[in-house]
Length: 508
Image (cartoon, rainbow, N blue to C red; front, side, top):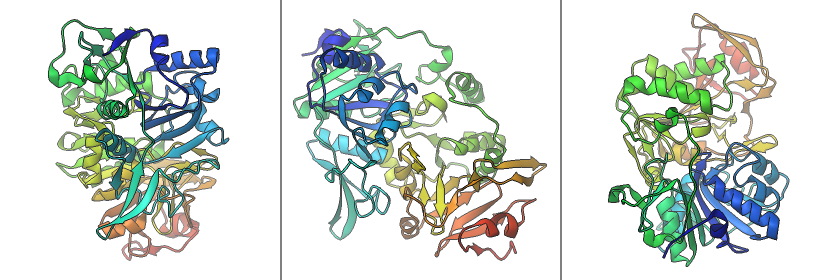
């Protein structure tokens, strides 16, 4: 039976050594006050400690002094298993200092493993991850030197087919953010941006005789409609009411509480951008890339667009008059509408549907997307892509591995080089004013996020769109298939590559 508690009382249910599952998506839908209550308790009592934290999509507040950052930094956590670390500024630095064990698994594979645990099954089989870094035959999921747990991902063959088997530690604490709790303890999510893994997490915790703690904005006497209830009260142990701070009306566009027609998407996006972007700069290279990549869209496509340079694709899709003829999706579960960016990435303006995250990854894993646009840190001669691990830094693979694993057409959007690249676009002619000092095309990538070998076996069409030309994945590796006006195919591209590349005859 649930109880209404203060944040301090609820956090008192957590014991040393507990395995906590969090339902946040990067920086959104995060029960910040519960995290901070845990931090205060830890500083006061040195407990709870030796914690393990599991999160499909990552957790954080884009601020190293908020949410879980404090108690992680002070040593309360021994292990983190996460799909993406991007919103945790302090934590992702500490990972590289070997302060605690840290594992990076594909977002969708964690989501499915949580759902499996909810059903009493130890783990989940997936073809996602084969031949990339998480595959134990490659590197495995450990990020730093002390992360050597080999139970999380195993290579298996079943009925003659290859799979990876993802198995998480048994979770026994859930920390969830919801909108409202009624008199029966039922939790509705009407003002949330996503439902994420909330139900699976709670079911798994109760199957393991654990505790479910939910932070809500308000307590209500009248129950919500049953379809709006994500977590039934019978699964809840503690409810903590924390009145939310007022937020700009722009954020209400992400809750689905009112209809937003296509003609208003851009207006709402601009209002949000002013309040949520981590930085805003004009990037000529990104504009060139987005303009060319958007030409790959066709009516009725089901699409995923990644963060960073790929986000410019939506701008040119709008200019080309096709944005309202395609269906955009986002990993958190949104289908239709226009995905938000910046600190509210994962939310959607004017979504048609928002369902559980595990269901979204069912769609992605089974090839339900027609096309996706993804960023890349580096690409090698074979066509492999590293999108999760930079020099001396990392954010994590997130949903990238699931999205690219079986999508019919995969378009990588990246500059030819970086750090100092200066490009001008004059009436459609590209002029390279100065080259960058960091190569993006390399002989071998440092770590594989996308396997060219698997893509060829799957019959996927793969493009690599840059600010000066386009490569495609051919039988032996990269092939240069398009060069933009103003670019010399030999001096500006081929001679600058650290490897030989096939060149389409129509270019020479």
